[in-house]
Image (cartoon, rainbow, N blue to C red):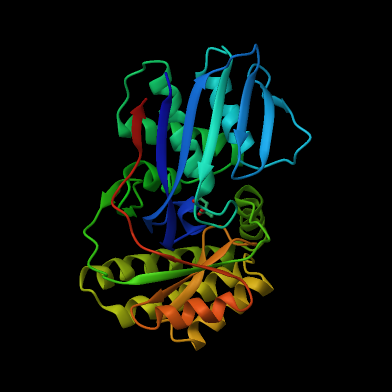
Length: 319
Ligand code: MEV
């Protein structure tokens, strides 16, 4: 039996980092997905492999170790944590394919976590619903990253456009923003855990300064919720630009991200900002018009991708 599950990547529109401290955030699933296929291994070892990543490793599921001489993809930590907690240690093969660039800020780790958990539960014939899956996926992310909000894993599980409230409630809302987004990403990968820790350290050292910045990002997110509800595109773009300034002040911007942000605005994006944890990774440019121009301008220096929102969350199937 092949147990297959896929989950979408996400783009955070507003509220990254602040969401870790209880502020709201808005994020949407995108039409780029991760797929995990689990089969019984024909040998005595469990294997994790991905042709898309050019990676293969033998896994020791009991002590969260692996042997490979082909690199160290960050997502392997999530896979090992899942197998350690939820697998009976029988030999399996986990095959990952993806059309999300890893480390690009589009939530590949959450999408890998959600799809691996779903494929594994299904492999073991375990019944689960999406709320349970989102909860367990969040636990895995928190344990690997040290600290994580439920935002990325919720979006990858439920799909659609999501507002995560201060009370950690998920609201899926109708997307009135009929617009395209361009993602710009560098090959310098972001490390979510590291960036979350560096913001926490800044907040600890300068709490009187940083706390109001975090609160302001929360206010921006709430304003943006209204902008989306009223399809107010100019306000939405302006709020993205303000949010970008505050993310910069939290120290998660880089020279490359900044360059893409300004190239996008110059090419006619209505707003542009880092999406995800920063420190590498990607930016989003809001392009109700000028999508092609923004795409081409970013592509001259970095990588660009046109993305759309997707309503589709995790999908499980057997073959
Ligand atoms: C990472 O995609 C988003 C952060 O807010 C971390 C989190 O929410 O866990 C930086």
